[in-house]
Amino acid sequence: MKKSNKIVIALFSIVIMYGCTHQSTNSDISKLNLKGKVKSIKEFSYTCKSKLIGDSVTYLKAERKREEIEEYYPEETSLNNDNILFFNEQGCIEKINLFTDGDIIFYNNRYEYDKDNKRITEYEYKYNSSKLAKISNYIYNDENLLKKKVIDNANGSPYGYIEYVYDDNDRKILTVGYRAGKGIIYKKNYKYDGNSNLIEFSLFHSFNDEYGSGDEGRRFTKERYKYDSNNNIISKNMIASGEKPWKTFAYQYDEQSNLIKVIETDTGHILGNGYVKEIDYLYTYDDKGNWVTQVKLEKKSPDFDTVYENGNFVKKEITPKKTPKYYIERSIEYYD
Image (tube, rainbow, N blue to C red):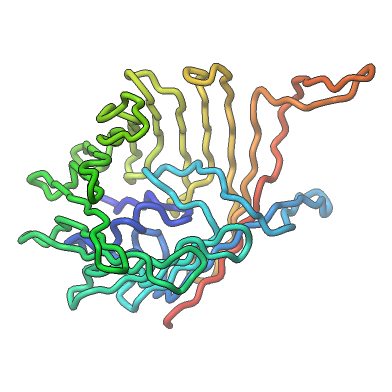
């Protein structure tokens, strides 16, 4: 069976939380669908403009984006900001910088590993600063699975911890987050198919709700996934309450398991205004087969525009057109 490449267009999702913490021999490099011995990778996003050259349309980067990129990716979580990742020679992430509002670093983490290349310590720094904010220590069970992540403030006082529970097949089935002085603040449940692909993820509300919303311990969201024969996610349903999805995603991939199309459908179940978005991703590649530019094209139905008529601004439905939304540029440095 072909190995799953579910993290296909980066902005580096689940690897950030669980990279190189499992007994698996797969490195963060392979989980990110990267080829070669990558030393660092930088992704910066820009607005995008199109230019007609002959009979062909070319897409060019324009201004640097200042906000987060909307998330359309299959994974449970995604970090959608400009970023720089640094890897050790074994392919595990050593350092992460995430940027906001241009070049301000709002997320700066560094990681240390043991002789078996398992993550053992995480250092989190303050917003746009070199001052340490938190230190996390990773604890493993006898089967070499991550058992507990203990988080302390820089002054040594406890911040909280996260516990992980596994089934008989070494698959994570429960994550419980604790905050010092508050107890349990969230729970995450995971279910799998026969190929050990995640098919259901559930997140439960804070169990210590300081705002008195009455939602303590209630399910906040549920996601369900389906896969193709290459173990790529081909559909995701997002469910807020009950079992009726309020938003669905369908995914298509190229032969290298890079995401090339997303169909997003908002059913109107929550907000009452349904829509369908069709998103295409275009790539260029370096000589190792890693993409170095990505263009996102989007078409939304129904689509609206505001026009000026008879002295008033009027919102009118228009014929949807596929337009460029952003341009991501990647710089990849290799060890070899």
